[in-house]
Length: 510
Image (cartoon, rainbow, N blue to C red):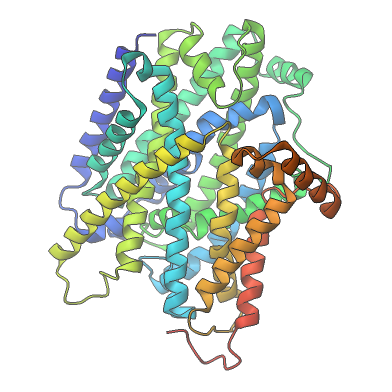
């Protein structure tokens, strides 16, 4: 495939995004950037959030896992589905009742300034790492399969893509992203369905024979019943539910779009519709993964993991329009995640850390200048993180993404749980101390439970790695921690906050 043609298609796609951004950002102000003037259509938000939730990680990594884990990832997806109902019924009513612009303002009202700042900082850390690892994956694919042949280095690709994202988000913010995410989700889902249909056609399969062929290869295996395994279905479902509560319900990026809807009822409607569509979309991605592995086996393609889908779509002689669909789908998968994160991080830093909305003496123009400066600053941080992930990348990245979520979203979940489920208050500086200690303890527990994951990345000696492995198996009896890492972290945070809580419950941490 001619890389020049592919690059031209990508640039044309960006031109369309810039046109939408220009149109939707007319007359925008700070309220438009932060919460879309609370005038977003619920169905637009619901549809656009699919693209944000799926991302390039789902588009590339989930199909690549089927050869090794079958449909095991769908256990986590079922947990996601359950978690969305908790967000809709518990968290959204709270946010609308308090009329929040930043959801972390709840922590300020309930537990005081230290908890508020702590929650915002952990969100900033979590979303920065999560968004940049997704962005890195897609840039890696573009470099390897499109731009490498043109002599364009990885660093230049990363800079150009981030500059383009800045161009269409810096003015309109949420007001623009609601529309661009809708467009990008449409292209991503169309690409997914077209690729599934085409591979079935090439392999002379129908839906029934496709399922039978995947069953024969063991690709459809889903429920893991070994309770010691990291993939045990109970752990996966519970972990998925709490991941959704933390990564959606306690995430400023996701909730920023929801609270931009004019009323609670429509926002809840958005969340419920969104969770059902997401369930179906993830299943189709796994179906695509099974088909890709069948296709690679039939054609002698020895590529696995994250490189499987792009290798087949670009380098295996498929028709031109399939390659174009893949590229548009890939770009559409990554940008709803990256642009929304950049906007949400800007909003959280400006509102929660700098407090520009609380400074009455600060004019609208001064707030805008600060916002643009912060927006550009986060773009630089994104670039640095992309380079960092390039340095440590050694395989499939979806496991790393879920592990990072366990470390960084766990304290956030513990903070909100303490605020909602108890009436206790905390002394000054307790929240930040509890969250950091809980995260360090969780890291220690995970290191002892799964030392191989760390020693492989640290390039330790075989003797040291084997000693740790034997100690781990002896201590845990073969039990492996999986996505429930987030629950452990949140529970430790909740416990530490409870132990440190004020005896006089009227004292607020101000």
